[in-house]
Length: 258
Length: 264
Image (cartoon, each protein chain N blue to C red):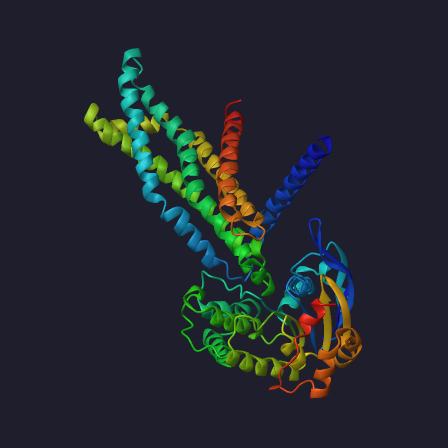
């Protein structure tokens, strides 16, 4: 029993160091990506299209809905306390600081995280990764780095879109509840908005993108030889990404507020 | 091109030993064939020699250089000088046949013009006998044709060392005959060839050096004629029949060496 526990802990520690080594390798190769004459740019463009462009509609729908929900709830609650103006601060904090990056990260994990893990996993099973090595392509710089950069770019752009549409969506709903002029609404928003709010949201978006791309790629490469391992890699990628995203969200928030 | 030297190589997958301690020199500019039954460790040995599998212990040298200590530039040079043909083709499924074959040129000869690349790819596909549309994805062509594409990808950059893992698997009789002629041309050009197979026929047609593998043990290795002569006593009558027949005649039925090895 004790021996088995020791082996389990040892394996977990080994995996952790292996994962950290993988992460540093990805970071190192990222610095060389644009200097190398490799053919990874196509992979980068495809990743941005898949992760960013194709997720835009679902992100916009989510942003408008959340913005609308906040304004409906806020408009009915805040007047009771005579704090109508607080709605702008609440909108900014919830959408730009918290839900924008967080919900975008959840969508991206579910769509692209699983896709990356299962795609890389099936490439391992089909020996495609080994084939890249034999022609002189480093799988990390050719397969992981474009996904990493594509994920970061897409997350930042999607978070900005979430912010814009979340705030626009709420204005659209305000017109049904308590019509106000565009100037008044955006004047209130801009008065409440601080650079720190935008910076906070984009910092989280960056951290979440790093987590999703590295965890998903790592899990994809963890597949050994059986095709039954591929869905397991996808499930692990989603589970671990969610946990790390939530923990890092708390961590970044603590840094900003404490 | 230098010899490839495998020193005290041990390969295991967890507690299971795949290759027992093996030391062997693969002579340059010759064809070395590793022959053995399924699960004898041939593919693993070839992949380790190509630097695709990290051994538990032991080293692999290309000339004086240990391939595990290659710098990035040396690794890139090694890949430029070598080609690998996979047992199960291992084509990249998200790109076309053309892009699969062109990749080694794009990586190692980036100064080539697009028209040069197109010309070399179509010539190479023609050489291996691929007669389908090169714009198709690998999943849209037969397994046999995928194998031909894999062979074309392995040889398009005219490697000096060619690793071949069961290169004739999934090919029909005509294609095998055709591919043999391609490999024989490469032998004439002094390409170092390291080949694993379960087919005695390939060994008898191509091997300058022969290694016999059983359950991860290299039970015999040396110049082809010498190994055959040495193995005669233990392998028995089939080899004697073979010798009497004049070993390398193409149309003669060839005794199943692998079966004899299994029965040892």
